[in-house]
Length: 260
Image (cartoon, rainbow, N blue to C red; front, side, top):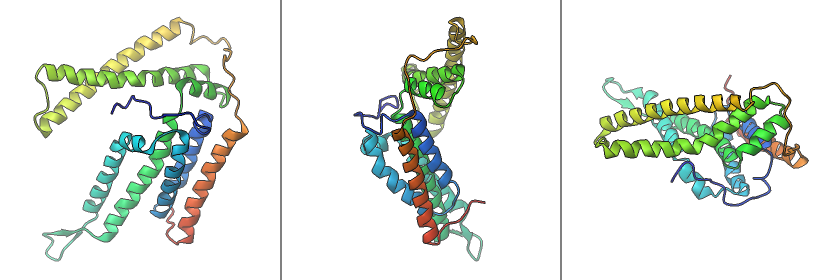
């Protein structure tokens, strides 16, 4: 499945909300979950997120397939936490993985997924043009920064296509991976080539935008009005309620553990 493939299959009331509201809601949840180290708060928040995400027009199955790197990172977090917190046995030749170390790893993995999932779902339902309009009109961001963000988001699908072309070009020259070491070397080479190409494309795009007057200090007008409505405020309110519920359940069960 291509990472450039759109996740949204239909327009819903939540998917049409302001990009600022959706990103703000994801930020509220992230800050709340980063304030505690227990597994209860992220578990409650994750359950609420999974219930709400389909109302953004994002099918859960497609979202789960897209998030496989996130789940892989979570699994690696559990494994590394369990290994590095293992306790030595009496003869110090063997190490024992305790339930406490596994619980700590699961807590960190849950927090990672619960923090990242709202942002992934939010960006999946945000049109780059709407994001630029919202940044300029609602957050009063300088137009040069907002238009630069718009151009960067528009170029993301090109990076996915260029990655596939680089892999196919190396495979045509007989440079396919034949083991873990050659696979890692091939990945590093493709990533470096993609980085170089992205920098060159970014420089050309910046020069072209400056030549067209995007760097001038002349006040710009907005072709599309993007007000922040009461429904957008409800998205922020809903995120605050879910964050408060997650932390409240954590405190009520006695598992709340502040990060500071």
